Image (cartoon, rainbow, N blue to C red):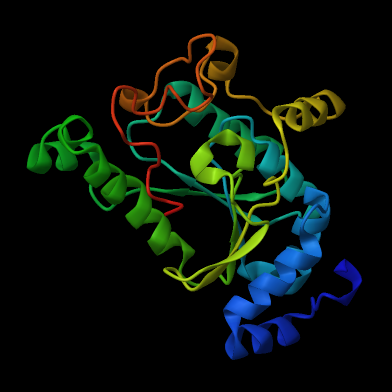
Length: 243
């Protein structure tokens, strides 16, 4: 039950020190099926400024929910250098419109430096490109936090079907939350209808059901999986942030 889940920061810190995997499992049992606002509200109490929310700047539902549950929360946006103009514009709008602290995270190398030394890596080795321009910057940005929330949903792809609401990110040593894990497209649509102020990336109206970097994303055709437009024609299905 959510009422029995510890939320005082000092108690949470002690539980994480003792057994982070067990703590995450207990939190997952208590919060499974809970409304995302409840999950984010608990996380805000439990972790305070140690909570970060990541946003890919698609429908911005998670960022909007976080702004309601934890005003002033840190929202991390990874600017890979390859984003669509529409995605960058959505990020700017979030910074101006939502009561959050938007932090734009960039790779160590500029795009020009990256391509001068490595070539067009997103064509020759997209896994390496994602590792350098997405995963490494996020890993660095998350240092100093104790928990991070993502917009992962179980219905997005088979690889995400087992996503827990709360888990332990052993590689980063952080609690990982997926407040929207149990939501469907219908749940998202209902939230957008109820909250017309939620910012939407214009590309979503043009058939881009999952939006990543420009060179590696295309619109989805009728009948295709929602993530079929990511790395189309390749076996790659994930950027590596959630592996």
